[in-house]
Image 1 (cartoon, rainbow, N blue to C red):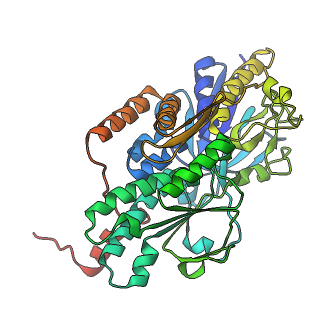
Image 2: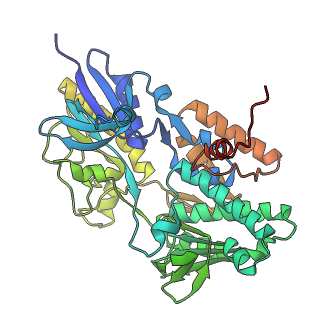
Length: 453
């Protein structure tokens, strides 16, 4: 009897989760065994991170538990540190190996799906490592919300005008989706929260968006990008185009135009780069460090290795791209819209490969983009139609509600939006997430908590 194929999926994000989900539906137990490896036990729906940071959605509804969704797969919480595809082995570091001090384990596989996603791309800006805040994980979103509300607390309680000014100055670097949506949602939240501080007014706050190019939100088109700039500036948000962050040492943001802003909040969202695991494989990479893939999503020049999403350079073979005279070497954008659709084709091709069937190429015309600019505000460019204001905001929510995985999450998110429309916004900070045992450790060390027996 033939042994079941061993399918290893590295990454539990859009591509990894959706590929594994489709494989468990399509393949029988005696055909294949699917193992999913990811450092986190959940998939994060990143388009909802700005709303989670602003308190519009509970953070636990932005993530999807992998074990609940992938009941037919083995989920390993760990990180792939090296892959030897010639030997069909992957080196994995897990929580158990770290605790036991055994280093790592090796997993053997027959088919490899490499979809680790991307990591934040940072530059050697002085002071960035010490003072910068990222915005790519749910933990960072919650931490940033707590931090912003904490700055309002500092500003309302200090008598030092310099400390107050720095606490009320918020600098965001990067004019893509993450930077613009995070800034817009948090500015909305902070403006609302300021009404509960007797000595902090919304006009006291400085919100600054720094973008190195001449436009923001390039995905929604030039016209909608210009509208987004006008909308943000109308809210007294300082949008600096064609400007770079030169330094943030000593909690002072120094920009390339010579301006200096003492600030306690610097959020870095200036792009992403391929996950480091890609460089620790024997698979072909392009000049940007992404896996070179064929239209079938198989890694070019290899057998039994597949990829999609942020990790893969997938040719764009859509008729639209050809008709518009675009570069024949154009690649699909590394975004969620492509990743979810690529996962479907990838899974179908793995099934076809195992069963000796023909492979299909990934072909999907870009439908458009939507972006939120805060509550009831947004921009959208969908199938050639341009929307702005409330219609675009509604389209943004409707689109992402349709895309968030599982009916459970859809219902919970919709319920939260409905309740948010009936009640006031929550503006409470839940404290630091860095060390949840800090209060206990302090009490244990000082004897503040004593037994009463």
